[in-house]
Amino acid sequence: MNDIIITITRILFEKNIPFVVYRFPYEQRYHLAIGQEQLSHNPDKFFWMAPFCALSEAKDVYWGIVRDEDINPKLIDYIKSLSPQPEVYALALPQETTREQYFDRIEAYLTEIRSGKLDKAILSRVVYEDRLPEFDPVDTFTTLTEDYPNTFVHLSLHPDSGIWMGATPELLLEKQDEAISIMALAGTQARQDGSEYSWRAKEMEEHLMVGQHIEEVFSEFDCVMEEKIGPHTLVAGRVAHLATDYRFKEQGTLHLKEFLKVLHPTPAVGGLPADKGIGCILEHEGYDRKYYCGFVGETDFVSMANLYINLRNVQIGQDKIAIFVGGGITSSSNPDEEWNETIMKSKTMIEKL
Image 1 (tube, rainbow, N blue to C red):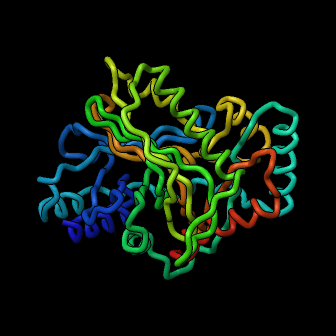
Image 2 (tube, rainbow, N blue to C red; image 1 turned 90 degrees about the vertical axis):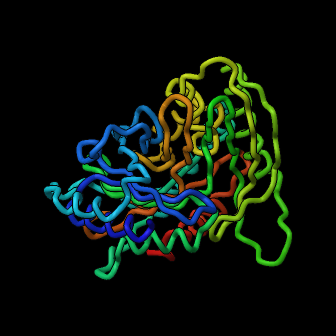
Image 3 (tube, rainbow, N blue to C red; image 1 turned 135 degrees about the vertical axis):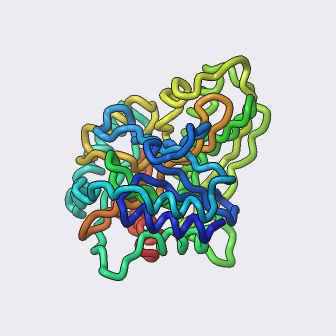
């Protein structure tokens, strides 16, 4: 089935027909979703790509998930019969962040944090890589699935969003009926081969802020915590993170979209308090994140969802590729260390391009 999906993906890419190809952590098989206008049936599940926050210029984008029984050679013939769509490369990439801009912005963050306005905010930046003639997004997608087995890997194309690709380790929400799982992921250091991890107070503090936010939001929506495992170390590419896994039980009916408006952005990608962290980002970060630090994944919007924070991702342009990286800023942050952390995180994707 994977071979058929990759064949279809290449045709869709060449024709600029909206699609997403993706793979869940620790799975071998690929999944496919295409634009609802091109889908031959009414979908019961959707792939949802949401922007970082409601104030982004980016729109929520949806694709209809192709049923397993429809992934066969007949689908290849059907896709070949579809008319090509206009090219999507016209969507502009965000401007690359210079070192001087990054250091100016981190000082603005620290001024707000040390004044007591907020405890933490995420500062991100954009790194450019040339899009080389031999770069093949579909090949890169398969490489990411092989090299990062514990991540959610995706490649998407849509006229409203452009072309995005990522390999994220962070589960936002997994819902099956009334059972809900979620991960708190914050605190980062370089990957250690053959030695135990030691976490500093700054990283533990940053991590606990995320867990506190998650517990408060679930309590607000009358969900009961059934299990909490962590913090433990989660390795993803060249970096390691602190992670805590939660399992909650829904009481009554949870309206998924309304719930996600409150839950996301979490302090792991926004800040704490959540509203003030987002305000700091919008005022000082200097660009629209669009889908970076938003979320991606499957849902029927009622009883099931399998959504991941859109980290370790890139936006693919005509001549350049924009890589998005960031880190949590607290009162104890050191600007040089934070800059070096973003360099380390960027290599997760740059090495595969």
